[in-house]
Length: 267
Image 1 (tube, rainbow, N blue to C red):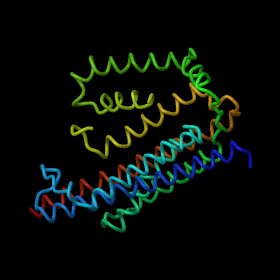
Image 2 (spheres, helix red, strand yellow):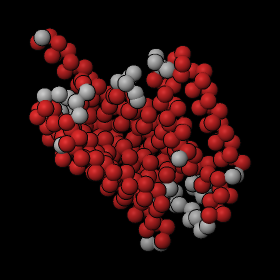
Image 3 (cartoon, helix red, strand yellow):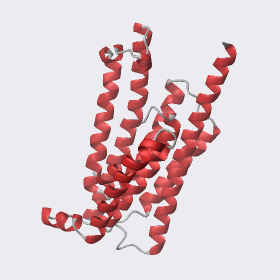
């Protein structure tokens, strides 16, 4: 196994570890919130702060931080086109743990979504491009100042200003794409209470992941040495991952709606 292949493998392993920690952190923090609410009688959603003194919640935060650090380091070993889609696996970890630890049932649609995420991730990993090694700061600077990437950065800045000053005041509260577009565009270079999390999360993931990969492809030319078959396979795998992610969130949204309606009838 050559050096680049070993680095790609290291990046994949770090991304998998990151997904495990981040997915588990949501469950740990939720259990901490529930425990704090049971103790104080006031939920965090209505202004309670007792969770700040709950060790379980802080353990969840530490777990998330470890996962984010592992994810950040993964980008040093493998290209973004490989690492970024693997972030969807944290949703699978969260869904499976929620099924067993929080009694949040994972129905048939959720299982299909998990399988799609795994299958798509496998396809992406198999056809991932080799990372181009960066040997100096000057080389990185040359990549960041190439005309194609500068055009992308300028386009992002223009689009963000248009969204912030023209569309956000008028359509920000009625169209979920406005704020998620701003976050995704800016995030590709380095909530909302208005909309349901189950709607925002998959849309943000799709936009952020797509734009991050686009920025990486433009700057590092990840696909320059790949044939059309590998590029098409990666795109198809990526689409499968996104579809599975959206299906998982749709299932969660359906369960929340059903639960709300049921409790409303009982009342």
